[in-house]
Image (cartoon, rainbow, N blue to C red):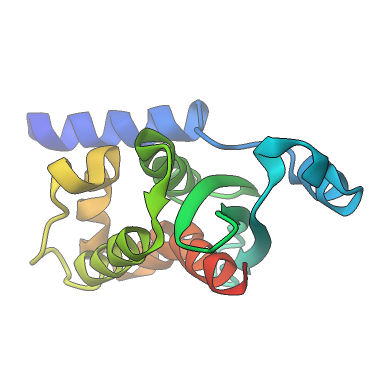
Length: 165
């Protein structure tokens, strides 16, 4: 294993052990249902998406909060269980959104589409580290078709929740 592959493997393990944006969604759901819109941090449009990989059992429930007008992604939180790739991928997605603070929805959609394209490329299209940050470490997953769905799970959940928010 070369140095870059080793670094990428470390990033994936680090994100799966110390995930960004992972919270107990039951609390977020209860707050939203209880009308926590009184809290300025909870304003906007909120939706959740549950995605499961039936082949390996990975599960992700992801919550997206958009601005009132739906033009920006204000927050991404999630909870889930599964392999280190699925958990790290969810963490990396949440970290990307968190890094930007408020990300334009169109930019977030472009990230998802670029991520999908790279993972379907079977190693031909690596993810740009400047754009994807730590998520670029998942480029190598594209060579293993059985693991692509693991890496895509949170991104598909994000796409679904953002469309419904």
